[in-house]
Length: 352
Length: 198
Image (cartoon, rainbow over all chains, first blue to last red):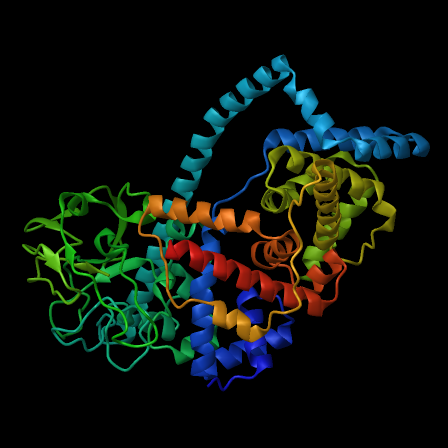
């Protein structure tokens, strides 16, 4: 039986769409932060409706020719000083039937010319726009990682040179991002410490290449009540999984600390409601999974951030660490159950 | 919005109304993408979208004297666009004598219906191909929605207008905006669930 009344449920919907007035939105935020049933309902609503985001994130841009044509028409209308003439033009414009307008375009020569022009313009324009967008997101992602590096340095400075860590027993899972119980079941909890300690803004953990530039934010009140990122969409980076319970420290040795998301475990989602309600489907490495790059940058490679703050883009997953090490796998292991640990200091394993 | 934002629009609209050509360009540049994407999602036919897009800005100029400079420009612009888009849909409906874009009754859906319609399944696309497929399916559901639900969902989710502005744009009470949004969420959730069961 639900304990929430009708107004409270309405507030949850208002919060999701952010359409209500400021007072209601504040009430809604406080409700979701303080009431677990409200938080669950909000998460369910968010999970369901977020598929709409896939449409939202694909930009629909106005074609240049349309903007230009509209400007020309406006200039023409403005140049008419005779109000009667203006009214007639507007009336004529409004009476034009859609079918009549289409008739003009049906004239063969016009259609051929327009089609040719569109093809040429589209052929030139689309790859350029895509490329510009790709590069811009790649750079923004590097800047995100640089911010995380700064946060890590400040954290280490305040904590005897240690990087954030949580107690993570050897056989516990590392993939349950979003689980809010007491046990540490995800590898994102150490990074969440950076958010809670206000060393890093939560938004920088989302690669713009993955969110199509859409900003993700979390309000401070909610952050205070959470033990981990609320769900996977709030962190699209993978981070180093340490081989034992001790906290990693900043040393002279450069190690990779964070990268774009691990492509092998992209299908794995955490359920935020209980620790056991979703199972990890065992992953068997195939040839494709061995070479796939991160989804964040169209599989062209991945940004990595090292403990000395250096950020770079690598086109393959292998790095020189003793011998060639794949940063997304455990050395010598082909099947994964979500509980593996790296084999040693020369084995980097970035998860989830 | 901030007052700086409004002041900027106020000045732009003043220059636009006086026929300053640079202001035409500025105003169109500022609103072209959001207006165009609204019309594309609402009308879903490219030739209609282009007509309504142009008519909206021309109407904005023609009715410049009735615009209150103290009010925000964006909802006003979308009011004109929504009215014109609905006129076009009605015209087509009359011409074809078919039932294009029926209106949905928004009266019977409660907030409990909204949350009951939501599935707890989470469907995050695995890769780019799945993502594109999800995009296509979602777009399909939106374009098949009754007109009055589609427009409310677009204004609330995609354009992120407040209830107050949506009510002004569509000339309906805020209560009706909310109940239509409830109906739209239930409609979308049910269709999405059906698609995922296939």
